[in-house]
Image 1 (cartoon, rainbow, N blue to C red):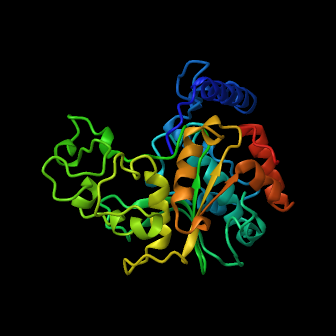
Image 2: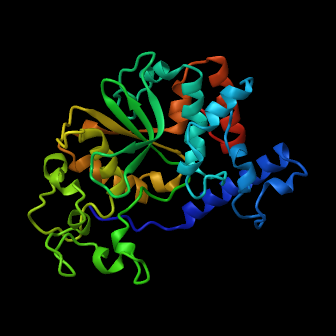
Image 3: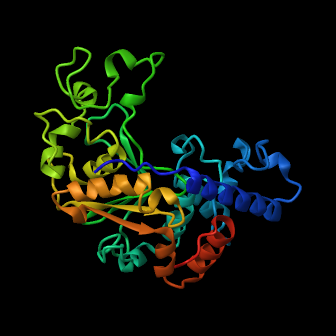
Length: 329
């Protein structure tokens, strides 16, 4: 399947619509509070200054101070993404939604949510199922371990990859290395799975001891002992890494019955619509999987429509509509 050659027009229009909505939200909720925001052009992103980063979270009302701090620390400050303070941050959105569900003791309500293919989006959950944000995965021998947006650690593991305004799912960084980067000499890749720059293996990640390619033939039918031009992992890196995080246990063994990956996205985002880059990446992986049910997807809008009418969740839906324009559908 070839990557889409999609016009940037729809994506630019979507971004402008979000930015206008965030500007209006700022004016309504933070009048005469310019000190809380970075100086940006009126048509640009709305970004809180570092001292007010917590304002980017939709914190449930009526929490006592200790509960409020507990909610904020569901994602420690050191694990916040570079642009967590931007209203476009998918990490802040994910913490607002899944943090509210967790702190309200409502994790089991996710068991009733259905993904687009009719399967359970979050699996069979019970009260007490642990829900973690920014879960660190250490089973793939990565120098910088994979971090999962939302992790449900029940009998079956579920890794939730949350997107909002992103133009795609994350791609391998090795082809993007520049000569001034410290690891360019030994890490650069031209986007093909082939021996390069005097390496002994076809992948610079494998050369560094990372174990992805040990499992990709069984998981996706991508043999490690032959060249691939282009490398199928290059453009699908983030989704595949999430799948490996779920399926590879502490013993380093691949178990495709261990759980699944769920992607959550904004249905308005052209990148996630048919012919969009994110849609193409997701479909490429889904079609290659030996067991396609390992990868599922769900829009934020559908998730909100399926959440129960519990008081804190009703309030959350109202907040999401006001800030993000996310309406149940």
